Length: 499
Ligand code: AHR
Image 1 (tube, protein in one colour):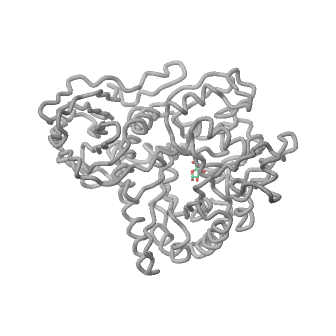
Image 2 (cartoon, rainbow, N blue to C red):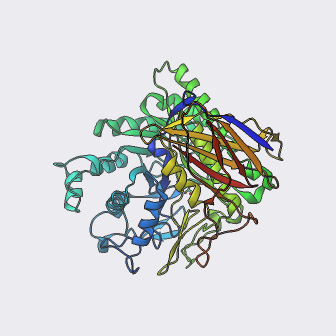
C-alpha cells in the first residue's frame, strides 16, 4: 500500500505539555521494592535506590511520575511512610493483598524523583479518607515551614518544600473494585470539597478529578457528567484510564487499540465541554490520561484471586513483544494528536509491573520492547504537534471499523529546528510505502530514521537477550525537494527525524 501525508508547519494542533510523557509508580508488586528501591542491591545509592534502574529511567525519559497509586492509594495512610523507617508500621494493603512495609514514603519518593528528573504527581486517598488527610499531606509537602506538619517534613530531612504542583483527587472511584468506591454524585461532592480546601492551602496547585477506569465501564460518560456538575470549576483535569489486552481479541483489533483511546478522548472532551456549558463556566478542562498501556490483563486472576500469605511479591509482570510495542507507539501517536486537550499522560507503570523496565532482585535491569517507542517519543516528539491525515487504505476488524493501516503524527521543534515523524504500520502482512509532502520546510535533510520490527512479531526482550528488539536504522529513506519516501515493514514503529 501507499500512505500519503502532507506535513505543514501551519497545520498546528498545539504544544506538547512535557507531562504528556509521564509515568506511574505504584506500591504494587515489585514496582517500588526490588524495582526502583533495593537497599541491598550492588548498585544501590545512599538512600537505597537502584542506580542501574535510575539510569534506565533517565534513558526512558519520563518527565513526571504519578505516585503512590493506583488502587493502593485508596486505602493508604500517607503518615505511615514518613519519619524514622524502623518505626514505620507494617499494614495490610487491601488492594493488592500484600503487607506494605512503608520503607518508601513520600519523602523518599520525592527525593528520588528529583534525582532522576521527574516531577512528582501525587494522588490523595479519597477511598477510605477525605478532605482533612488530603489537606494535611499537601501542607506537609508544600508549606514552607512554621506549622506542625511542615516542620515535621523539615525534621524528617527535607528543608525545602517538595512543591508538588499536580494532585490527583483519588483513583478509579467509579470502579466497584476500588476500596471506598463511590457513586458519581458522592465522588463529585467529595472531590469538590477536597479541591476547595486544598486550594486554600496552596492556590498554585492543579487538580485532577477521577474520570472513568475504561471505556467499557457501564457508567462511562455518565460518571464524568454527574461528578463534573459538582466540581467543574474547582478542578483542572479529568482523568481517564485505559489498558489494551492482546488476549481478548484478534490481532488486527489489538493493533487498532488506539481507536478506542481516540473514542475515549473525544467522548470525555465532549462531556466535559457540555458540563462546562451547563454550569456557565469560562474554563475549559484538560484531560489526564494518567494510566495507559498494554496490559495482558486477562492473564491476571484479579484482586480477589490474591492472598496475603502469597510469598511471591511479583504482580502482573507482563513480558511485551513487538506487536505490544507497535500498539504502545500508536497510543503515543493518539495522545500527541490530542495535545490540545491532553495535558498529562502517564504510562502505567514504570518498573516490573506492566512496565518498560524490568529488574531481577539482586540482579540486572533491562528494557522491554515497549521501552523504545516511549523513549524515542519523549526524546524527539517535542514542540508543536502538526496535524497529519494519512490517506491510506482502511480496513475493518472484529472490534473497529475504518482503521487506517498506517497512523502517523509529526512534531516541529522550532528551537531545535527538528521535524519528527512517528508512524506505525498496523498491517500484519504488507509493508507500506510512506510518502510525505513536506515542502513547507525548506532544505529538509534526514537526520536519522529507525524502525522497530521483527520477522516474528512475538519476539520479546529478556534478561538473556535484552536487545533482541530495539530500533534499528531504517534503510532507503529518501528526501528530495521536501518530498519524503520510506518503506515501513508490516507491524512496525518508525521514527523519522529531519532538520
Ligand atoms: O496499574 C494497575 C492498576 O490498574 C492500578 O492500580 C489501577 O488504578 C488500575 O486499575
